[in-house]
Each structure stands twice: as C-alpha cells, then as structure tokens.
Length: 180
Image (tube, helix red, strand yellow):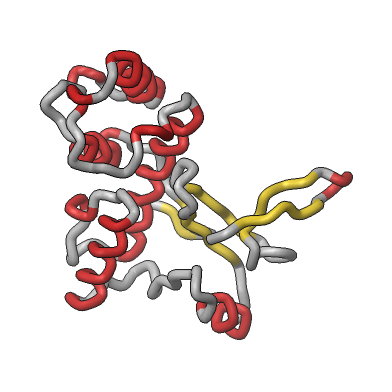
C-alpha cells in the first residue's frame, strides 16, 4: 500500500498508509519492495471504501481458508513480488499465511536495512552466486535474528532462505487484537 508522510503529535512526521490517515493501524513493510501488510481498525463502510482501491488487497476473515481459485491467485501474486509461495498451503488459515508473510517481511526489512536490497527478488538465485561480501552480510542478518547460520550454504537458493525464515523465526505475530 502506498504511504505518505503525516504529521502526528508534537509536529513529528511519520510515514503512514495513504488510506490510514486518522485510523488506528499497524504496518509491516516488505523491506523496501513497495508492499506492506497493513491492519486497520475500520468500520464496515471504511473497509468497503479502502478495499475498493486498486492498490489494496483485502483479506477474508483471519480464521478462514482460501478456496482453490483464491489460493492459486495468491500464489501467483506472491511469486510476481518475490515472495516464495511454496511456503504456503491451502490448509493454512489466513492468519497463518499472513503471520508467515510478516516474518518474511521482517527478514527482508533487516536485509534492506543492512544494504542488501540489491539481492532483488530472483528467488531461484543461489547463495553461492552472490558476491562474498553479500553472503557475509546475509549471514550476519541470519545471526542477528538468533538463527543458526549453519543452514546457510552455497547450494541454497534465496527461495530456500526465505522459506526457512518462517521456520526459524518464532517471534509472535499480532494483527490487531489477534495473536498466535
């Protein structure tokens, strides 16, 4: 969701979702890739208005599951944005899908923060094909999350690393008042 600056308390400017002005929201960006998971407390009419925007993907209730057609569209959407869709399955609840995505987003934020945004979204690129300095910074990012870096080897693809994020990172994820 596109974002824009908004003045908040004491004249401090913050970046907020462009449809979030004046609303209570939570946001988790996909590390500089122009995608974010956003939760907002909205009325039914606000939800209808926001969900109708062309740059918004509204999700079903968090305890529901995607049907086959929805899941196939979701996989295509993920792959087009460099998110490994094979980490998800149609038996997962929307909450589980989103919490896994948010964990991947957190990892990508860390990569972006340490200057690894140039890795890009080619998920099939092998770790061994990355320059040594990039591999070392990737290893540092993994260690900074408390993961064992022994799983990072040159034969893995970026897809493999992203998928492992959901397995190794066990921080609780919360959407509004709902958490794991």
